[in-house]
Length: 310
Ligand code: GLU
Image 1 (cartoon, rainbow, N blue to C red):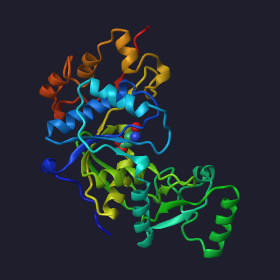
Image 2: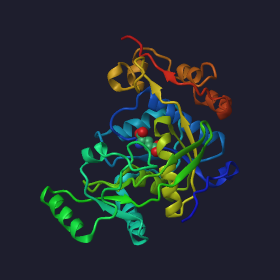
Image 3: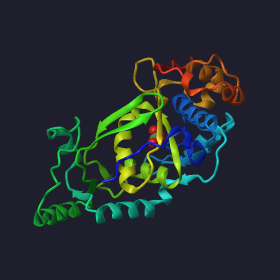
Image 4: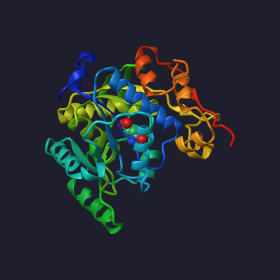
């Protein structure tokens, strides 16, 4: 089995950075901060900057266009090609087939709630899949498949792993380690799972720098493992602090004025906040941000945003 390897820092000229929001609504200030940071990380290391629409579920009509327009209005420059996940189902299917042909997948018939309630097998991370469907005999599989079919569902497809411990390089967090479980590649509703889609898209579009919020850091070992199996180089990761609301929960639309439009209407200085929350003092636009940005100086502390009163 190939050993995942991280792209060395000096490989900048060969790869690209990206931002990959889910088009479930307008970007809030936390998403905007992550997107601007992804742009700054790419440009400051000489990388092109790409955009991906992660529209496999949770899509709101027109949101992808508005998200992009918002970041472009802040001076984010996007290089082609733009990947749209819903148009790439054949690529995802091809990679799942290749894994299946290598004996690295199995069907899973477990309902979601059963998976969550099941005790973890020894040496697996909390919440990891306990392997219920891993070694079933063919007749049990056939009966389980028939039961799902009656309910209009199909089996999920899981990756067969050895619970490898994988370490990835994160330019902000340092080494991030995790045990890889038999995670889902395709869900029971036929939709390709996030981890598979991300790895295939990043791998096929030459992304070698992944900047995103740190709530996804725990996914990086799984994704790196899968990248290695599919023959892609593992990107360098930069997991930036997730922006929180004053309650300590992740910032959300219901917290008040949080979108670019809402904040601008209230006279809130988005650029000043971005610069200050990153530890550089107030910025006044992309030009200044590009001139001052240095990943080594990025403030790593958690970020809290209190929406201004209307
Ligand atoms: N679509 C994910 C989000 O909006 C980001 C996925 C990624 O960057 O890998 O949080």
